[in-house]
Image (cartoon, rainbow, N blue to C red; front, side, top):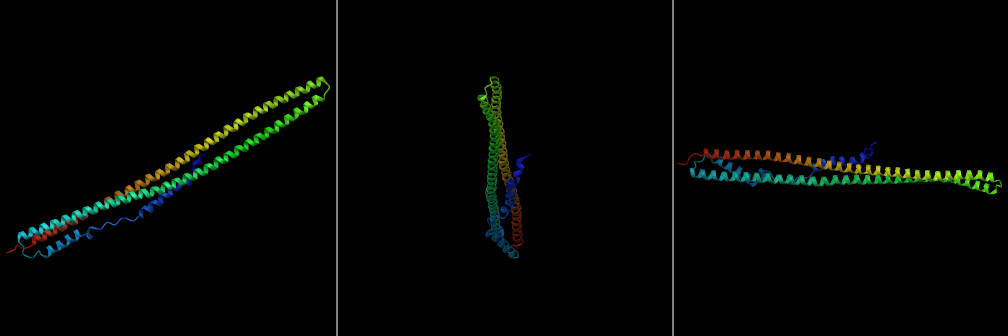
Length: 278
């Protein structure tokens, strides 16, 4: 029987911890990154394009149009640079969140793993104690059995020696001595058997302890492996979340650049519609 399966509810603490961490990490507050539309650079570009559109019916010299275009390009460039800066900042925030999530949730997983191992240590300490107690009970039972057997043999020998001493018949004495010698052989045989049984008990106990040591080693290794598996799953999840965030930021920035390019185009259209000054 696979004894490790018996302790699977203990090890499942790691799986529960990992699943709870999915909620814990997703609930973490993100550092605020301002939107491009809220920045001074974007507002300045929008306001300048609106100004150019308000002037598109006003006669304007080519020199003034060139000034307008130069300012438009400058404000557009400033907004583009701000968009890039916000993108970089948002990526840094996402990276920081990912690292913090990995560290904090990783610590929780390791704590759950340590708790699991501590419980396994307690479980196997109790099993070792139980094995030692049962082994001592077997030894006590063995000693009691041989004490009874040897005691009976020794009493028989003692009784025969008394009979031999009291007997006046030489032939009877010899007969009794033969009985005594047979019983002495039985005592020797019993003592030998007792030693063999003691050795068998000791060997069985050593095998039992080795089996427990192996099971304990395997159970702890399984707990650590499950903890490491949870850590790897956490890292992969955080990495996927970060990559998805970066893709979202890239798509957002591309949309911003398109919006800025449209405003640049609208400003230049407004400049081109300005009638020439007489």
